[in-house]
Amino acid sequence: MAKSLYETLGVSENASAEEIKKAYRKLARKYHPDINKDPEAQDKFKEINAAYEVLSDSEKKAQYDQFGDSMFGGQNFHDFARGQGAGVDLDEILRQMFGGGASGGFGGFGSQGGFGGFGGFGAPDLDINAKINIPFMTAIMGGKHKINVEGDSFDIKIPAGIKSGETMRVRGKGKSYQGQRGDVLIKVEVSPSSEYERKDDDLYKTIDVPLKEALFGGKVKVQTPEKEVTLKVPTNTKNGQKFRLKGKGVPNRKTALKGDLYLVANIVLPDVDSLDSELREMLEQKL
Image (cartoon, rainbow, N blue to C red; front, side):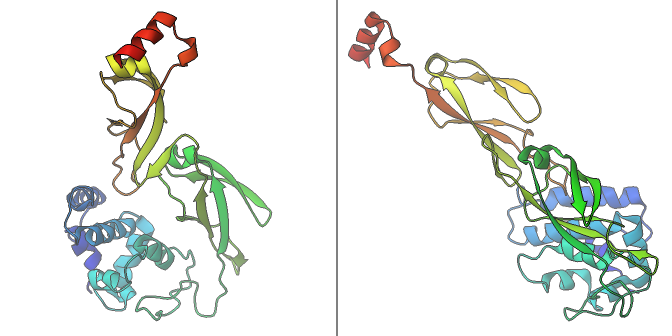
């Protein structure tokens, strides 16, 4: 029985969890779009992440080991992934394929060549769809968020680095039917921040730099998502100049690598009317 997910990660079907993890990290670094500029790298990166999504989960792995590539309509995973079209979230497709939570067997092949559902033949859909809006900093740092679904209130763990539009699955909190329980599929929306702008895994923040420090250099205290830091400002700093704090951005949920934080200088000019008359006169003459 063909099992091409293992081939995607370059490991054998008998590979240990540690070997799978090690292979994934190596390939993720190699094909990360920020590092590998090959046009094919992004698709390869998605396939690697999706394969690891299955093989790193003991339940999904056991399911895949049982049915192999028949879950992809007999195609190998590479062909199946490319056949889904551009812009498709492979992780979400696999989560839906493997995450039905029912033990009644697969619901038959779908029109795209994979299995359509997992609740058993004729069984009702036990999953519940919900939406939540979370604070910007919770999306960046992770945390807990209380949700109420059809009268059932519970806390969910928000993973650091989650983005708007992503869907989380909470197992066993859906509808009940004949002793089985569906899941809750939660679509996440992240509230905007008045302090930060997010671009992929990088953060941007505008900071005030007094004119004196901008001209002659100095130090400015800056609050980052993690803690307060002291930024060394060089002489002749320009308005809009960017300072990069490596690894202080958003954690990537797939690679665990963190993006960067870019501090954008906003030069604060003094009130001319408050300047000493001699200093004002000298500035008018010299500038």
